[in-house]
Amino acid sequence: MKKSKTIFILFLLTQFYVIGSGMVFADDTKFTASVGKTEVSAGERFQVTFQINTSGSGFTPPSLENFSVLSGPNQSTSMQWVNGAMSSSISYSYILVAPREGDFTIGSAGIKANGKTYTTDPIKIKVVKGAPPPPQQTQKGQQQPQNQSGQQGGNVSDYVFIKLNLDKAKAFLGEQIIATYKIYMRANIVNNDVDRLPTFNGFWTQEIELPQQANVSQEVMNGISYNVAYIKQTILFPQRTGTLEVDPLGLNVVLRLQDNSRQRSIFDQFFGSYRDVKYAVKSNAVKIEILPLPENGKPAGFNGAVGKFTMESTLNKNHVKVNEAINLKISISGKGNIKLIEPFKISFPSDFETYDPKTNDKIVPSASGLTGKKEFDYLAIPRHSGNFNIEPVTFSFFDPSVKQFVTLKSGEMKIEVEKGAENEPAGTYTSVNREEVKFLGKDIRFIKSDLAGLKKKNEFFFCSFLFWILFACPIFIFFLLLVLKGKYESYQQDVTGLKSRRATRVATKRLSVAKNALKANERIKFYEEIFKALYGYLSDKLSIPVSDLSKEKISEILLKRNLSEDIIVRLISVLDRCEMARFAPMTDIPENIVYENSVEIISKIEEGIK
Image (cartoon, rainbow, N blue to C red):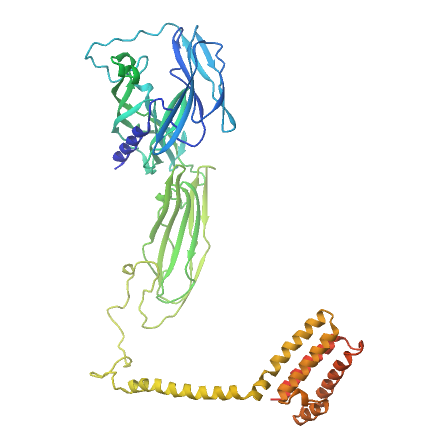
């Protein structure tokens, strides 16, 4: 499966790569400098190219004082369409000659794009003694060796190679290491096949999923621009100490190289001549030193966890009955060899029946390592009542960032178990599968002495006593509704009684208006609303028209209703005050006292007249 996936990724690479295209594979703007080779002979011609992967202007030439410029700057623009998206690039090239031996530097070039100025890194050129060898002539039909390119002055290894990188040079036993295999290309790969996959002896491995569509970027190495893509990424966990070797990855590829020496027709002169070359490319092998974990300070319960973790323990309930299950969850979260952590040994009381824990993994491998959470779910069933304690759970791991052991400890868990029903079946539970719980006493049950739930044979519900009761219920409810409807209509037709019942509600609304007038400092309106509230209430409550009401009649009726003389005197006093306030201001009693007296008078009359 891994081999076929690697072939599929390389197949995608062959679709993306274009010779000398300068295609943009990322959104970031890049301005790079590259040369055909960094070591040339004195008097040999070579080319230096400055390329930006977007539109640019204001090109600033580099310092070329140590070289003879035969041609340049030669500007070229390239446009490409990939998956419906267009990208463009601009390149500036020079043909140079190194006149003498020595170590020289091609200076930085600059260009403006997207409102910014971009510069290239300087390139070091080593000029050695001697002239370049003349082109090798091959006889007709003679095959070049597989390690020779069809292009003059170079080997196939200059155009494609695989590089293995490890994210660290040394690691502790069990510490995660990220191994990355990348392919570097300067030619089109037209075919490929996996020759060798690494075995990773001495390591426990976790493969990192790479995207199905390969992401190709550009890198400049030793002044030469390459198209680069990831072939394989693996997380390694060393299982023994000492010097371990990470194996190389090998591919058989077919490269399509330009061969200008074979031009024989006008088409070759216009499009260029190419030849396919088979080549076995293999990455480097990398050795890494694996250090043992320190013995000093190693906890007794250490089980090999290496990384950075946190622990959480939860008990679903602390108060249960006999034979009622409890669930204890231990969660380990963090980054490291979390998949290798084994379940904990929990010291449950001897009165508890326990089962093997269930393990749930939520772990994600990525380029930063193995991260996530691992949960252990323990089921226990108490078989006797009482108060029990579950001892604290400890978890120890080695943190390579600080080179120390760390021990985490949960709190003590207390459980109170009450007596359950005598014949209650054992084994109620929550998240654990039913098949994992044994039922005690299933083969022997108590003999039931009551006859609850039993009925005679051939006894039917139709025409039974319950049937006739349920049949008569709708008829009874119908006549009951008719009686209630008649009473409601009579209640609504009693206008006098209706007014009496609504008297307090109407008076309350008028008193609310009077209170608002008091807040607005409208004195005359305040007394008018108090007067209307009292007279309107008495008219509705005593069933007497307002036109027939007088202070004498009010006093007479209230006395007959056994209302206290004090309330009657206060009522007459408030009514007199409301009448006098219309014609002259009164300052002996504040208005808020008048308002409170009115509310109290209505309340007392309501209590006294039922």
